Every structure is written in structure tokens, then in C-alpha cells.
Length: 592
Image (cartoon, rainbow, N blue to C red; front, side):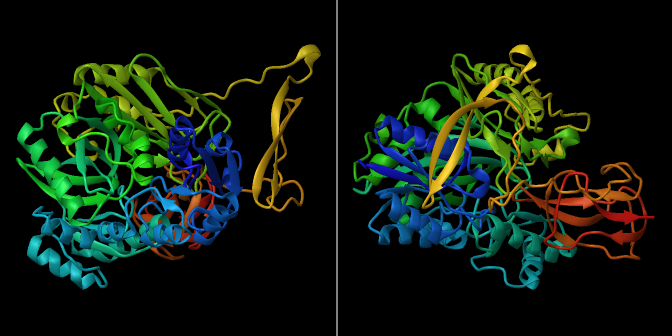
């Protein structure tokens, strides 16, 4: 087994891996950006090193910075988590070139499966058919238009080197082709560091079923049940469950065997997930994610297998601890992703900011995998997953009831979360009957009357004689990039933020006047509902616009959001340009 593992990631997955390593007696090394100095994964790790930078590109996607930390820390293995470099073959090779173990598949398998086009070809070699699509990258809108003439619309444009719905755009008609290509490439570049895209037929009402597969370096394989991930919005999962309800046993077996065949076809080992679309009694291979999935806990809950432990042991050269005949499942598990988003009226707008209160539920069959605690802040620069609530029951009805109980116990304040929408999904008759599809949340579920709240911040507790109560504060010190912490008890008074360079107090950023109020006021002042970065401006002064027309595109938490005009009229002023950072309530366009 390894002596020290570096986790090249952040948030709840970094926390999950740290805990798994600790249970095996393995020391851990965290890395962090300037915004994550006090993050939970940094606090839990045995050692922590600064990467510098604020954005993912400047920190968690900075290969040289991570390699430098590996050398200085003496880590003998690296766990990539998910997202960032987890499916990047060049990063995996750079790790192994240092003589350090990459806790994942071999780089050659990542190359094959990380490129969704070559993954389709590999699946076909294994006798597994995919959704009708292309086996070449999109380089010109004419390719999509020609594909549409043959297969019809809608068409799915997808990131070739990514997953999780990032960089995926659905093209409803020919007029939308160019804008969809540009948006898919921007999102793919921001999240995965590459902007290659491809296309395939977009199925209208499929279920999203995936198989957890494992292989060892001795050539043994098993599949560990299946997961249903059909409750989605924006092609990103909200709720996952295992096993998939209502799936015929023969289809389960065929999917499992297909997943193993795909893994064998590319010489795969360690954890992987084969994703399929299931519709009208048939299934199509979608892609293989060459990493641990966000939803892996539901598989753990029904199989009793610690998937992170398996990852570590297989990477260390051990054989799989069981054969396919020994794999068994018990009960039903549901995972709910708690995202920092405002689901009011079904819009699911990003909601970055500080978490002022967080109390996760507990009880029999209830698990919380979180990446934040009260006092931590959700940044616009990273994914908005706060954590995952996982509940197990003896059957699906029990699991649903337990999950609803836990969600209604959950207390979080300071940011909006998807909890109100999650409750609406789980309470709906369609979900209970397993009649939902990947488009059900957006096309069928009525969230028009849903109203979310950030909750109330806890009141400060005074000390004796009216003096502020003393609290334990930690002062961080970095020596050659390695983080050390010194604790002290000081009066509970507001802390003045200091600029990253240490040059003094950081003045609050003055917002541009939002004279007309926030979006939806109909005043003509178009304001953004959250902080983020402007990636596209679609109007100019003097343009005529209609109510509901998109005027700018805002990127927040790695998602693009269309900001629309609330009234018809003429553009009087455009106050932003691509690349500008804006805050919640900032006016970007004025219409008269």
C-alpha cells in the first residue's frame, strides 16, 4: 500500500478520498488555490500545499504546479478525483513519468475512452452499439447541418474529452447550430481544458443507466450493479439511485456484460463507469467515464463495497477481492446532489456565496458526503456541489421516504440550494412509478410555483459583560508553499480580509448601480442574478430587443446562463464586455 497520496482535486471528492486513505493508514496531501486556503479538504489532509491562482486553469489545472508539489511532498501516488485532470491522459503520463502511481486506469485507456469518438469505436469492437452519431470532431457548422438533414433534430453536441453534462448542448434546429457549437466549446475548455466536440442523435425520452465496472492489473473484471441517473436538469444529474427501478433482469445482465466488454476492449483497470441510454426496451452505449463517479456512494450502499478502498488496492497491484458470482446487492439507495443553485420557478441559477449555517441530517441509513461546513464559501470559479445526501432502505419506497425525511431535516443558510426541487421530484407520482426520463424535470415537472430561500444567518453570541465571545481562529502560514496553521483564541469580531499579496485591507468592490432592481423588474435595467464572468454580449447600443431575448451570456460555476431582457425596447447602454467579472445585481444592459 502507498505511504502518501496526493489528491489533485477539491471539494467533497477530495474529502472522500482523504477519509478513505486515513482508514487505510495512508497519509494525504491536499493542494489548494488561493480561494481554497481554508477549505475542508485542506483542513482534513495531513499536509497541504498552495498551487496559486484563483480559477481552475490557474490552480487545479496547472500541471507543473501539481507536479512540483508531488516532488516536494514525497507523495508516491496521486488520486485525481473527478473533473479537472481525472480523465486527462497527459496528466496521468506526467505522474507515472515521475515514478509515482496514478490511481486510475492506464493512460492508454484514458486516451481511448477519454475521447468519446474513439470510445464509440472501442465499444463497437467489443460488440456494443452506441447512439447514432459521428466518429470525427466537429470543425465546421456545416457538419452538424448535414447530420441534421440525415438524422433530423434535435442533435446533441458534446465535449469529446469530458462528461457530467459539461460542454453538452442540444441543437433544436438548424438556426441554433453555430451558437450551440460556440457555447459547447467554451464550457468544455473552461471545465476540461480542451474544446474538441462531437455530435450524436439526441434521444427524446431515454433513461440514463450506468454500470460501475472494476478491473485489476491481472486482467480480472466485475460489474457492480447499475445506477439510474435519469433525474437531470441541463443534462446534469440531480438524483441517482441503485439499483435501477423497473429494469428487466435480462437487460441488467446484458448491460453489465457490455460494460465489461468495453473495459476489456481498451485494456482497462481500476474504477470506471459505462453509461447507457435505455429507451423502448433497448440500450445504447453513451460513454465511459475513466474515473470514480460523483454517484458512486449509491453503489457502495447496496453492495457493501468501499470503492475508494478498491481503487487504492488495485492501483497498488492487488487483485480484485471478489468474482462476479460473489457480487450481491441488498436494498435500495438514493443519492441527492445538494448544489448551490436557486431552483425558484425551475430556473436553477447558480448561487455562490458564504454558507452561514449547515446541519446535515443523520439517522439510520443516512449518509452525508460533504465538501463544505458552516463558514465556508461557495466560489463562482468552481463546481457548485455542496455535498451529497445518500439514503438506504430495505426497498425503494423506504429509501424514498427516508430521503424525504432527511431532506426536510437538512438545514443550510447563506446560499440557495436544490433541496426544494429535490423534494418536489421525490414526492412526484412519476418518480415513485419510475416513469421519469432525462428530460422529465425540464419538460414535465412543474416548478413554476417553487420559491427558494437562502435562510437566515445565525445571530452572534455575545460574551460576558457585553464583550464579544472568544473564538478559536486559525492563522495560516506558508513556508515554501506548504501550509501550516497556528490556532489562537481571539474576540469574535469581524475579520478584515487581506489582499492575496498581503498589501493591506481589501476594499469591497463597488457595484454598479442597479437602479432598476434585479432581473425581472421590467424596468429596462437588465441585472445579473449572480456573480460570474461575461462570456458573450449579444446586443449593441441602438439594437431593438424583445422581452425574453438573451442580451448577454454569463458563466458562473462552470455553467453558461442566458441573461434576458425583461421588456421590449431599444438598447440604451451596454455596460459590460466579454471577460468582465460582475456581481449579483450588477446592471449589464439598459433598455428604453
